[in-house]
Length: 219
Image 1 (tube, helix red, strand yellow):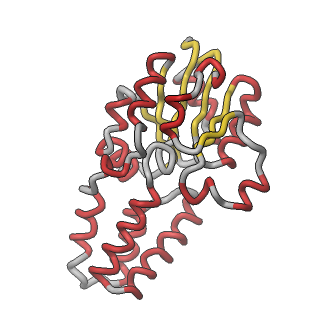
Image 2: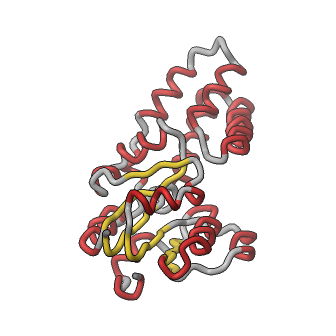
Image 3: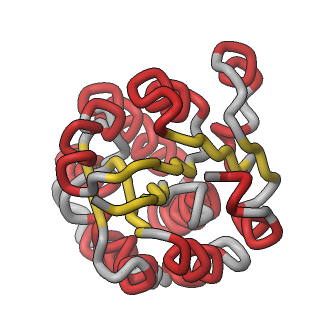
């Protein structure tokens, strides 16, 4: 059993996914125009409601069905797969992972599809930074027993930008987990979420701030 396991979210925790989405929005507008760009995001939200996670490539498949004779779809798929995710890492994110690994085991704990999300984690450099310790689920907060089976620990530290996730994991593991809330991205600043869910054990303004936090206090 590992003494301490750090569980790290990816989107808007280690990597600025809002910026990635903004880049995609601009690229779609340039390629297809404003109306079709909005259509893509409508399909994206419909699919997210069905699946429970963001599926950019799945939304692109539905987008293709809406415009089956538009060959520019091939360019969009290449743009997504080859996106330079390393450029969207938050400042000092990889340094934080390195420091956490000095103290315990660092594991990526993410939601997402089985193709694009692992690709993002790999191309960003996160996969290598955690030594390949990567878990991607459909609903990670429902898979904590599997997480514990794979990474048994005396204590867990969960770092995530969503208070909903932090609250669900805290309810499941209680005092065995310390929740850390980096206030980054649109979810972290959602007034409704801030109102509806309890505060995390530790709150920082940015992931890089964990380099300045006493890890003895966090864990």
